[in-house]
Length: 83
Image (cartoon, rainbow, N blue to C red; front, side, top):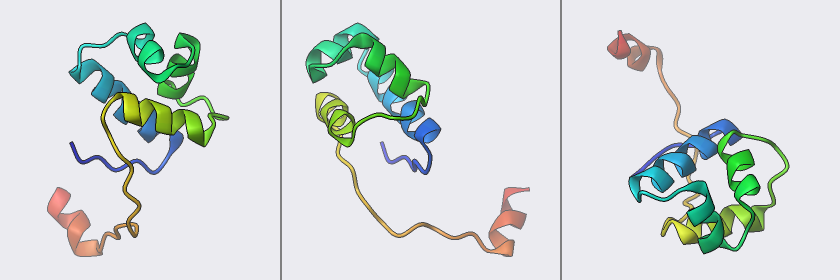
């Protein structure tokens, strides 16, 4: 499951998809990560202010890891390929 997340909204969507792929409720994930269900909800809906430690707790609970790579760049030719 390789996904690009460049915003808090993107990260929330990635975490939501991973949670649902494992058939977990927000409450289930919160229990596994040792956080409140409301915190899971806030992160999945891209509410700002989440602690980095909390994000790593969620990633660990979902058996995911974070990879930091240079940002990909599109060229005008890449944009033409989309259409």
